[in-house]
Image (tube, rainbow over all chains, first blue to last red; front, side, top):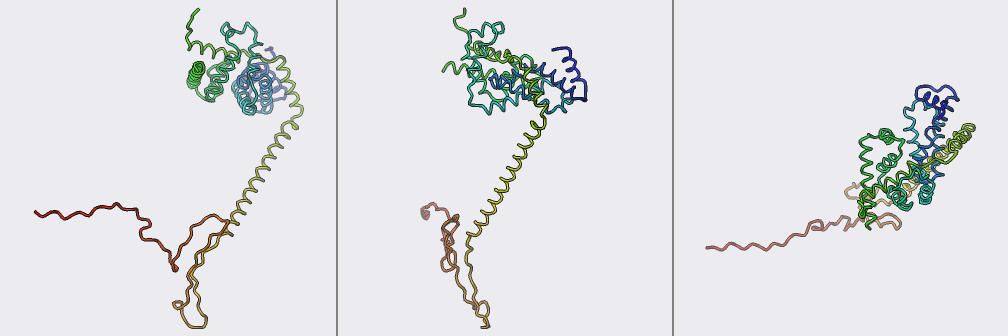
Length: 192
Length: 158
């Protein structure tokens, strides 16, 4: 992030009233620079489709532009943006149920730089990834949301709790339950 | 190498690896550039893109919902009127008095009500069964069937 963008971001957090259109433009520029990758990951974790994830990120910032008069009231931009992106992604996923997503996952596994992959990942094929992701979709909505958001390193438990409008302890227990259920489902699937 | 790996660890490893896909997903190149371009495009045509499109969509929805509600109300009213027209009120006992005869109501001729035939295309109603102008209810029609108890014998005298 450039110093200009950092300056704009600091204005966003401290300045209560946005005066000019240039201010808004700078703030949105700073938000795009800081959060576009995080939002892309959030959207991708739900849709598992690169094009749709990108579209969701763009739509998220369009929402910011539409509600620019509320920018000064937003206390935590990351939480606000992730919540918008999550809801948009859920809507998008509901509308495109029929689209297969296995190919996108396989593409992602192939295109990830090898430095970012661990030795464990090498032995786990893309089909196995797809199987785990399909089982994640079978989890209850709250557990699934907590699990998927916890996968993103950018988000702390406090922020996930704010996004889900609940407490940190609730988030921890949801993640625990999600992993346990997922583990049971995987074991059951393997034994059958 | 462990020949019998722990299945719990194995599943955990699989879950972590799958979740790591999202954590490591890279946004496509020039994503920020495309976002800015789209924002610029939207900002330069705010009315056509936001107000007109979404306002028009909203007004269309309101009009459609109002029309549907009005249609529903009309259907209810028409149905209700038609149903009430199909009903045939049961004939009551008619008191026919001869005017100018000087006789009171007690001596007037009384015509017993007739059973009302059920209309063919209407909902079923209960039928009135009359015998000589009076409803007939058998004496034991609503009573449960009793249990036959043998009569007790007289105690033997010593």
